[in-house]
Length: 185
Image (cartoon, rainbow, N blue to C red):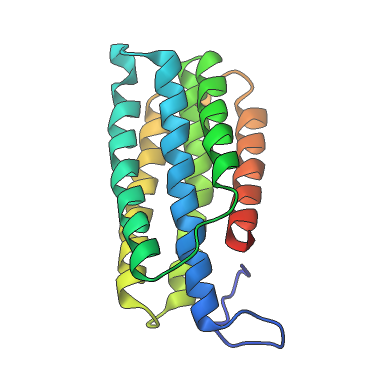
């Protein structure tokens, strides 16, 4: 999405308002599913360690987000992304892979993903304006919770991860690509 949203002002070939809202719900449901799988991968490696409590708590919030978007998919008859099987594997692999690098790397992954998602949700809320108050309210609420996750990850040692700038840059690129693909496929 552009830095300055057009608020559904359409150019030839642009999706309709209904198509844009469906894309939002599709990509947000896919993103929350991906987040759930990232945390599952992290917890598969970190197990029941007491220092993984923050990850367990953030995972619970993502479960709530996913449940809400799952309901919206059904209620609004939105097709989920066809990439779901890929996000199932990729999310878990990203979570497990970063956790294998250590707890701080798992936190760096969370910080990077949440930074991208926070901006993504802000763009969606701005684009919606007054078009869909229910969806906008959910997006704004979830955005605030994603900001909390990013702040928690940083407080929990994300920036002490090995190769933090490289790791987070790679995760951000992957997250942006997943967003772009899930909106469309």
